Image (cartoon, rainbow, N blue to C red; front, side, top):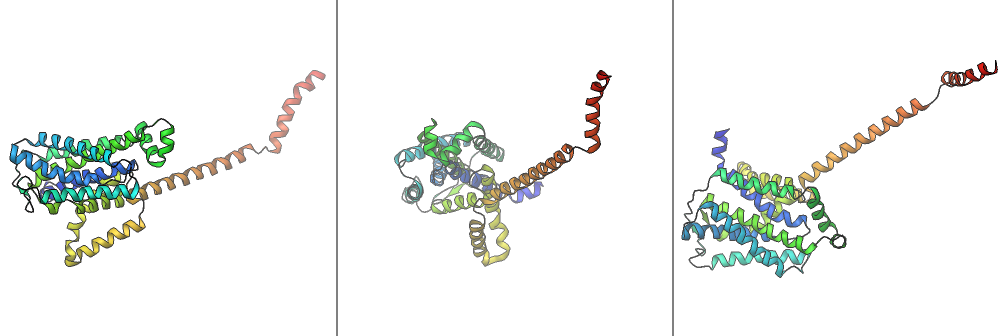
Amino acid sequence: MSGFYLSNLVLVQATLTGLLLALSVQVPLRMGVFSFAGAGAYGIGCYSGAILVLDHQMGSLPTILLTALGCGVIVLLLGLLIQKLNGLYLAMATVAFCLIISVVAINGGTATGGSTGRYGVISDFTMGAMFAISGIALVLVALSERGRLGRRVDAVREDPELAASMGINVRRHRLTAFFVSGVLGGTAGAMNILVRSAVSPLDIGFPLVVLALTMIIVGGSLSWKGAVIGALIFTWLPDLLQVVGQWQELIYGVIVALAAVLLPRGLYGIYVDTKRGVQRRRREARAGAGGAGATSSGAPTAGSGAGARTDRLAPEMETQA
């Protein structure tokens, strides 16, 4: 097991960063916010982490903390700027934000390294810390899907007007989604630069939007479990498809297209629908068995009826005698 882990360490690291990237898009979608700002925060996190470590000799954990908070604030300000947009217009505005980050990275001079990027980022970041940070983020996102908060999020997504009439502050919830998206994306970007030690403009921008969207569409967009499934599939799938050589990209595209068409609710959605169908059939079967048993036990027999009448008449006959 340790041999497999060490030989695939890069894929394990990519899975964890990919998971946080997918969550940075999935969290806003759960609130009905079609935003890809988390992918832009990922790019900011990569370059911010490189600058803090290389230029300011900062430790790994303070770097991740400052980067996450800074990206959260930046994406929150973006949310305030475009809060009146909805649907496709909101999505396009956040895609433009991601493209702007790429342009800034290319033209950032010595701070970003231009088209070459920044490299040689060596820090004290460990895999234990990476697992811990990813696990904490995943647990917090999972808790947001349960209880009162989960019901509020569902209400904001399904019917904002009804949610507002029930006293839910829809604007605050959506701005919170922007902030959380920025924190998750920035954390993923900072961890990526700390484990890979290099970043260039080719590593950020629109390809990250496509990757994150593919993960949550195929895995499932309304649960953290879907983000986990998508991150696992689309981190390990390209490596598995290397056996087909030059056909790798074609097969990868076909798989993504078929999944998008045939699995509109994602793989986790298929699991949930199947589970509910099985439970419904079991309830119907129990109800049918219970109804048949009630009919059978409730039907009186001639003997029992006669015996009951005899028992009722016996005291009366004794009294008359």
